[in-house]
Image 1 (cartoon, rainbow over the protein chains, first blue to last red):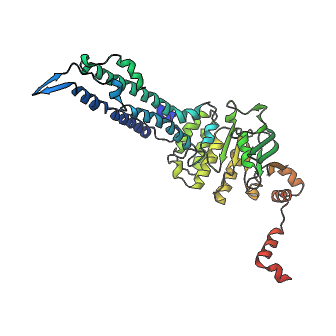
Image 2 (cartoon, chains in turn cyan, brown; image 1 turned 180 degrees about the horizontal axis):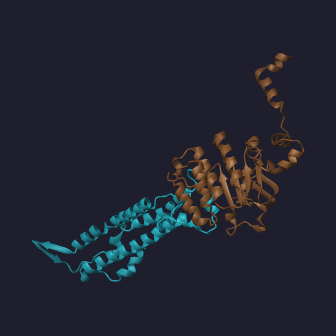
Image 3 (cartoon, each protein chain N blue to C red; image 1 turned 135 degrees about the vertical axis):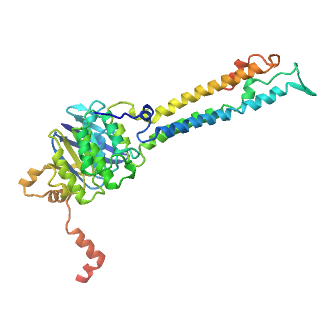
Length: 169
Length: 247
């Protein structure tokens, strides 16, 4: 007997929810969170520019100036990821409510011989995207830290930047 | 054998099931009758494990859990299909989760009721939704098929067709527990009638017993419920002033 198994992503969502559409919005949400985080770049740029004195067409580094801490410049840049992650429990609740909208398909889910299928269909995708979001936030943090440490003149950097990063977390 | 022993269920202060005991051997078609709120739906939901309760419910001596839950299926007037999935999608889902799913019966019933295989359930009429709900319960491959008012909203011809098809396709191992208000309609189709009132089983007779007693199913229900035939006449008299006119 020929069986057309649904794609793997659809097996993680309530039956009938178009996986492609939901995943598209989830990825767009992550992109939006990343775009919000880009506010770090102008903040870092203006602080870096403040280390220089412009004389005519020359930019002279003022070695007595100290760049503000990375954590201070980072500020709220990563909040987009936080908001995104906080939306994921709401998505899980939306999936749960899906089984009670238009019919009580929750009855079928509760009658399935496979343990955890109902929970998996409600929570798997939100959980996966929380993890992806956390990974993206961490990679973005690393990227911005790298930019901060590599492009800011070394002499103007305050010590123990990585230790101070815990303030952000 | 599905056995329900001393099952009670309370919603807050209200006793919905009061020490209910009932045995359903395999191969029976049992009608479950009672007024709205009598406890028919609650009883079915307790059997399926949707509601917590006191007392024991066993299937061939074993408690009902993940290991044997697939031996029970459920069709409800609330509907339990996935509204955004097509019948074909349901077929694949059931095939994956219920190993005894009968593809042959599914195709046959879908053809018989002329239901579209690739339209989403949401877009179908209430009658079609009811038909599909019952089709899935019948095709799951369950030994015990619980039906809670499955024909609410279907026309009489449609229901008639269903009874005939059901009688024709049921295998000896399959038991149907059918909750309905359509007492006269199912009287020729069920083998046993169970009456529930205010959470208690108040009657349990096989149709053969009723026949031997020279009683119809409707008569048995009315007698058990203490139905007062003169109640309507009296009420109409009072409402229309017929009583005064007669004085």
